Image 1: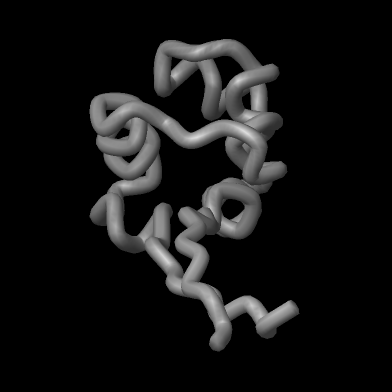
Image 2: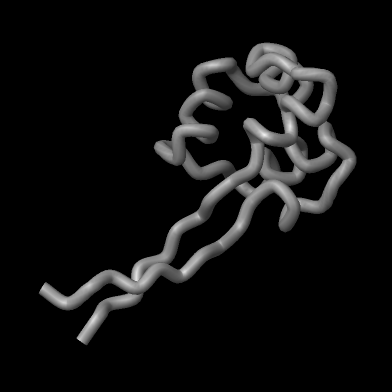
Length: 78
């Protein structure tokens, strides 16, 4: 039986480019974090606190659900 795995994906990179090719550093400064944090978020290696998720969404003028997406992924049975 396949197992369900959940992931949080994001659209940060796309949103940065849609907003005047905003740099990771620019977004980091507006969100109050380091560029390294933005890099880790985009790579899916770090998940933001709820507060940071709202700060990032506000920077782009969109809702949190337009930046971060909760996804259930089916994994094949071994």
